[in-house]
Image 1 (cartoon, rainbow, N blue to C red):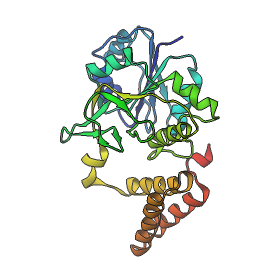
Image 2 (cartoon, rainbow, N blue to C red):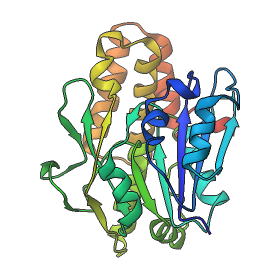
Image 3 (tube, helix red, strand yellow):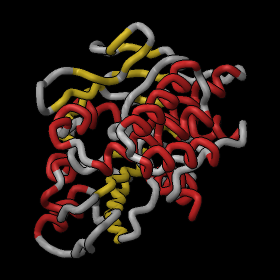
Image 4 (cartoon, rainbow, N blue to C red):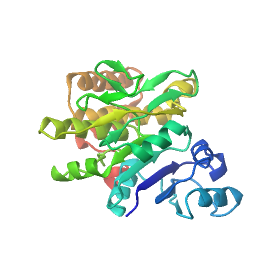
Length: 283
């Protein structure tokens, strides 16, 4: 039985270009497997001095998966839970996160269902996540499971949480999402099982430095990001309806109509009526 499975999602980077892998290689791990999932668009070579350094840190328990199909993140995440169903903890990271000692400590000693590190933007050095109904969390504390929310990179998911989802015939992540919305779907499903009486322990006792695309790439917000965020809103309005999400959805459709962006408008409407991302409907 593995104590920890650490999943790092790579995209369009070599191993040594990943801030996550570079900083995590400064620590040593016992009974822990590092799974590096290359989601494209080019293959990563399984060789070199840097890989040897990673192998040393993880007692040669490093697996590199070259998958150039750019699979939906929700499917990649859920498959890890299924493949390593006896692991005690699952740690999800993207490729541009700075690992801290407090985060390593949380991996080793945290015993709650879900650990949410404080996410500090590498751009302005401010904390942006996790958030609860009380606001942004800046201290080490237990969190309200009915309102806690954070991004995907840095999640420390205990097997106890996976088992609680199983009791309700749910996977941790909603496979109707592909990119945006995947991380938030975990929390929406937590809200759901908590409303059914499940006791979920959530805590924040660590921090990570992370490149937040919402902030640092706002000047380069391209058509791809615009479309993906629009699809997220449409799917969320269908799958997890609230007045706020309905407002965002109809405002988005109206905005695309005014700008005569017929492709985006059609994509939003289709995603809403089908309730699934186009990529996920093919899987």
